[in-house]
Each structure stands twice: as C-alpha cells, then as structure tokens.
Image 1 (cartoon, helix red, strand yellow):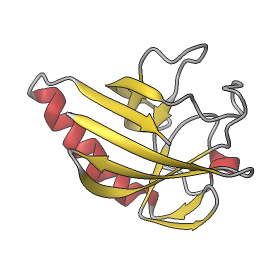
Image 2 (tube, one colour):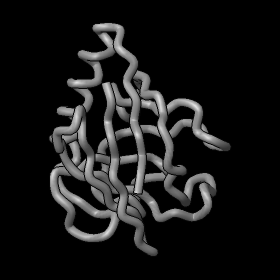
Image 3 (cartoon, rainbow, N blue to C red):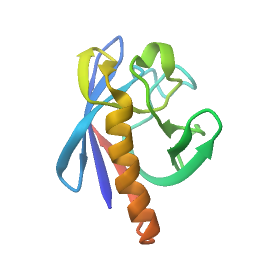
Length: 131
C-alpha cells in the first residue's frame, strides 16, 4: 500500500495533501525545510517504509524507516507543527495556516486504521514524499 504526501514549502512551515492509494484522506503539517537539521526541519523528499509503533506518549502510531541522518520520525497527531513537532508529520482535517491545522486525531485515526489493516495482511506500507 502506498501513501503519497504532496508538499508545499513555506518559510514558516510545510503543508501537504495526503493520499492513500490515490484517494485524498487529509492534509499534513510539518516543520519548514531546514536542510534536514534534527528537530527543526521536515525530512527530505523520498520513499520511506512505514512500520507500526507504540509509545506511552502517542499510543499506537507510525514510524518512518531509513531516513538519512534522522531517526524517530513519526506520524502522530498535532495541530501546530512549530509547537508540537520535532521533524515528525501530523495529519490534519483542515489547514488553518502555514504548518497549522484542525482535528488532527480524526484524520490520524483513519490513516492508522488503514495502515494497521495493511500490516495485518502482511503488506508493505510506504510513504512517498514529493513536492
């Protein structure tokens, strides 16, 4: 299964539109592009495998694999990239500004459900990030 994130870059942050199997599912917010610097930049464009992950903080969520010079890049709920993210990706139902959105948990749960169903079927799940 393939997720595709189409990004638009701004000085203050990054907004995107997320598709699963060519179907629009919601928007995404991220930090601005700052040369892949840890904790202050979104990650480079590319194709990344997604895996299920659990933590006390985020409960069930997704982690991206094999990111150059980065680790622990997650897909988890957040509504303000600059206040709540350190390089991760947050899905949102609607955009309210650059790197800001609303109702992150609603879209996140949809994405999580579809991805976990694919994991149960032993499918490889990838995220392609492009401009």
